[in-house]
Image (cartoon, rainbow, N blue to C red; front, side):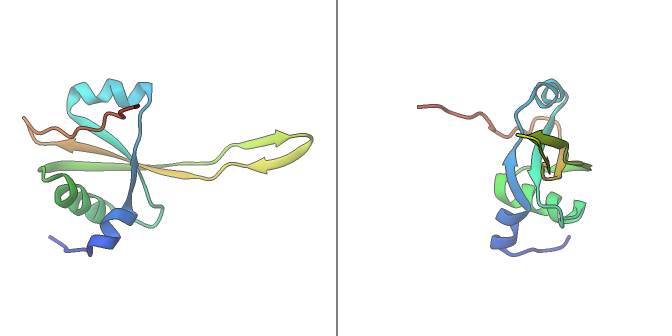
Length: 101
């Protein structure tokens, strides 16, 4: 198991992702996070285990390419996003709910 610095852990895990698909896969004990583009599966696993004190079984990653969009006739491109689907061991949970006050 690799040990990464505390600062790097917060840099690797950007934010939890809340979407229809993320909500659907949560019933199978998967959690979805936006992660930095230069992170790898080992860093993601280590960061999740240290930050949330849970046991990670597997990490699957994907890079969602940014869309090309037009705004007032000008062509632009959204940023690409790397996502991590993290499967936890049985009985483990992470509270990723967003509380609005």
